[in-house]
Length: 545
Image 1 (cartoon, one colour):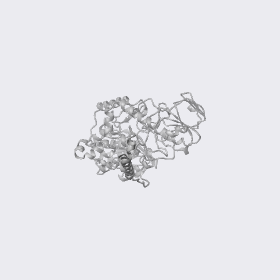
Image 2 (tube, rainbow, N blue to C red; image 1 turned 180 degrees about the horizontal axis):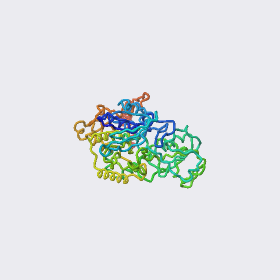
Image 3 (cartoon, one colour; image 1 turned 90 degrees about the vertical axis):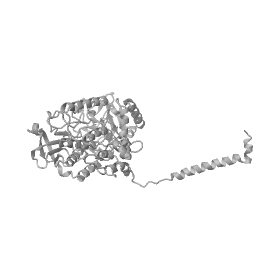
Image 4 (cartoon, rainbow, N blue to C red; image 1 turned 30 degrees about the vertical axis):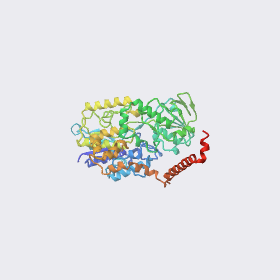
């Protein structure tokens, strides 16, 4: 197809967009990446952020989603990767993905998009005008495109809360985005503001060498990466049968059961971390070592901050901690697109008015789409991949979007549903249920597995998809660009989960011999007793009764 398509950003969303556009037949795809590497926030860099909306993991970041659910639908992660990968493994995986599918040749590194505007012929052609700057030469240029995909995601501008006295505080303050590791800090006492995953991870890491005060307004429900069985949490959470049961069971009953399970593994009440909302009201906070740090006194839970002094912090309960050397604000991000004019897109309080969280209903031509602008309980990689498959079909005219009025109705319905479940927070404005959202897009693309057909033709595969882990490989079983290896990938999920654990030979005890020994001993005792009571010599004993 001769139409030109621009993809802005070469992170995990941008690279899969390029791949799926090329597969759909677009041969003039250009991906602009302002940095000199691919990977987006998954590429760890030692230096400070160059742009205000540039996000980056810290040195020790480990994913919260296991590798089987992190993987793209036709490219499983290597079986030797840990189930919860370090950020360097994710970076390596993204590079392997680009190399395997030949994506590199479409990416222009060191090229920043300065502005995105409607082309003068937009009303008739739907074209867009992009101003770019090549940082290797300093040259700027204008490019015209028939279609544009914005793949910057939602980790934009850091949110830095304002507290009384903060401007006079003499210690070091930073956002969690700028935290690298313990070597980038100094001192002996720190305050971490926030209760999300970043706050928990940084508290645990700093707690090894500093006294940490973890300040939270609301508390949180703490989950763990591993289920009690030792398998990843999402192995059990993301499956079709489980989702069906969660839909039909009363919400109060579901939450009560979840709270009972969580409190058995983490004493929320004892540690004064029980939140004022239900477990399904917000994204879970995944922490594995925080309990040890709290129990050892290296991390102390505190309420919200009231004000700062020159060297300390006063909390809302009146307590005061002096000689604070470091404050880290793990307070999330604002969704921003600095290269897009406010008249085209003006996001307020992280609230996005887009159809399926991808399309602006006000546009007369559906030639601009957004990727990764949602927050599921699960991995973004398969969602961005499915979104890009959907977008490619819209660009080709194979999927026709609803009218503006119908799009607005869907947006209102989603907002109403969202406000009825999640508590009011900037973190909850773009929430989506992982598997149902994937199914919704997959049905439109034509790659959602036909469960009724599989029940008749392949009952074993049907049962695996119904009760097993709902991995994204299922969306390559049929439909456009099906992958011949999808079925095998689905049935070998457990093999890849177990592989990184098999790092030493396991001595197998002969359990069957132990059982035989017990049975033989019991049989001997019973036989001896029977012989004793049946013998003539034992009649004196019977006469005593």
